[in-house]
Length: 148
Image (cartoon, rainbow, N blue to C red; front, side, top):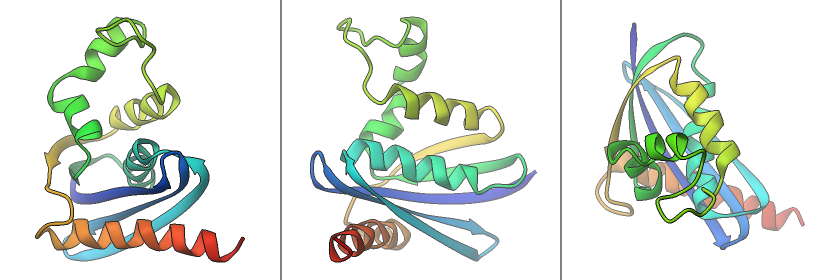
């Protein structure tokens, strides 16, 4: 099974507002950068979409180390929030509907294919690849605004 490192980040100008996502796939030092934007979205949706798009780009089952600065995404797995949401029919411990259900469900489906290890990194700090993903995401927002 191939070992891949996936770095991700999402950004939003206004929340909700114009959003951008960026990710970098690293396979043995070969890097693939991807990014995109959405017109009306939230920061959390862009964080999820960055992971989803990175995993969608994989052509076969892989061992994937995912690095994200999003506590929302990473802690959902490291603290087993997702398992609880699924058991509670997509409701939080406070009985509210989980936000972004469709994205969470898409991500869970992708995770069935891969062996994933989650890593929380500090945003806007010393992780070069995370900083590059932030640049990709914010650049998508700028491009979107310039094309309006």
